[in-house]
Length: 107
Image 1 (cartoon, rainbow, N blue to C red):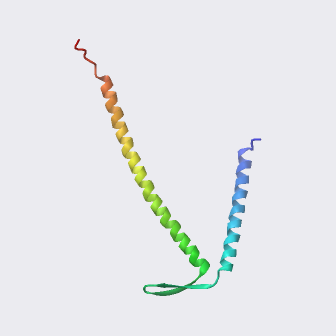
Image 2: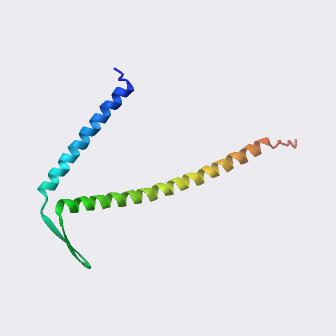
Image 3: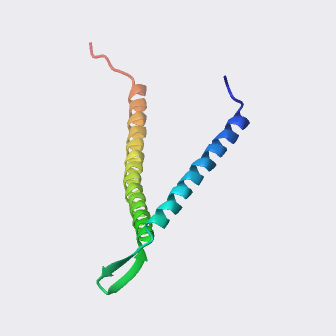
């Protein structure tokens, strides 16, 4: 059975909201279960944070660093793709020029 597009979009929106609600509930539960403070010692001092907040911050920093590294790799691939596309255009132009040159038969 094929579901009309607006009806399908409404179902997907509801599923997305349910999924986000489940993630929110799990996050709040995790934060309540891990509320004890943790001391972070670094070179110039120390700071006390809740364990759940520390884990969330470390996860966010890791995600941001992963996005940066992924963007660099993607940028390199795009640059290489543009370079190869330019070489292909040049080769196709050269091939078209070679096809227009008349052949001479010496026999």
